[in-house]
Length: 138
Length: 138
Image 1 (tube, one colour):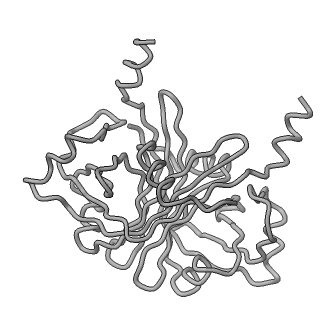
Image 2 (tube, rainbow over the protein chains, first blue to last red):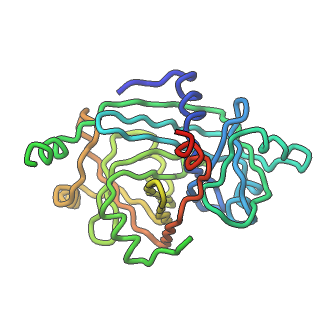
């Protein structure tokens, strides 16, 4: 298992466009998949009104994860940070990044910015002997 | 976008073996990828000593997510529940499920059980016009 450098973490964050946000909602922890894009050293995503928006407005503390699995290797970046609903005059930032909704549907007007405070990434060689066994048997 | 039935959610949870756990650590929310297996209507995973174990021992409230993306469709299951460190005389449960570590390394002795309280799953048709544009251009 290798620790990724900060630069490698940001490269991976820029390549990916789908991650999972963990946030507080009152005294509960919630998790939800989100489409996001990197803007400078922040992440942006759009959201409709709902528990996700309510949660991060009530408590900015959040965590975010992306990962990728190949046959032999995997990598994962985890960060903790602060989420903030952008003001209307800042929302244009979402126009200048590749923030592309994967699902057709009503426009989501709210833009949320995540500012990472701690970030770590790991890449590792996958040890899945049962896969090789399955291949050998074919 | 379609809501998955409870049965479809469990089927997907049984098929997958890798998800992301969101948990409290004091007043922070954390997220981490985990290898897991389904045992009855609970999830089991192994963990070494560390913040994940400390977090769920201090606060059982947690959330868990799995997802899968194809070219055309995606699905995601999100659950909220309670995490509990299994007692030594319950740890054998982890021997009877396909809980297979993806990464070679020191044995992780602690077994944690997640009991879902709320669960929802969604499958959706992916709307990624830029992918089609890229294909058309080739």
